[in-house]
Amino acid sequence: MTTLPRHHLQPTLDFLLALQKHNNKAWFDAHRDAYQAAKQRFEEFVDTFIDEFRSIEDFADLSAKDCLFRINRDVRFSKDKSPYKPNLGASIALGGKHSIRAPYYIHLEPPDKSFLAGGVYMPTPDQLAAIRRLIDRDPSSLKTAINSKSFKKYFGSLSGEKLKTPPRGYASDHPEIELLKYKQFITIHPLSDKDVLAPRPLSHTIEVFAALKPLLDWLNTALLKNN
Image (cartoon, rainbow, N blue to C red; front, side, top):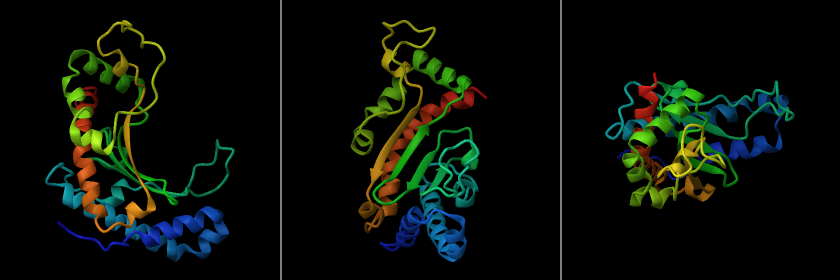
């Protein structure tokens, strides 16, 4: 396995922490070199993860540049006019950040707000209907995925917003009604800054996402059949 230095992402955390205190264009422009260095470290981490994870997941010719979100915020409809996000994120799936597949997601945000996650965060109505149809028809693989020892170790449980009442078309006594109530199908593994800078952050990321893969595989079965 490829190794990265223990504090490989230190410049990234340092820049993001400083940006939170000086979130304005003048400061950002004056520290653009620091931003580029911070972004490069994150890209290197994501690229290394992709290469190491290829034995588990077919990423084809995917690279970090296909997966990273812009740091600029869209402030057109927001009361918060801060021009930059206080974090860096990468949505990793075949096809990049705009893929229809359920992605692996890496989020860096100091202090102690980083996390590894995955799933379907904002499904379209058609995608949500497809996921619910698969739960209704064959929930066994989903239940196996979220009840596995490794999934529980790293994620605990499935998370995301849920309806308070059964979704339209499903009876309240449906055996999988609690799964059917989900409006989002996501799960999160929190990371402290200490975790991000630990001796084995890459191998830890691979272990966490290997535990996540069965859930994403199940979700992609629904999403890809819907297209």
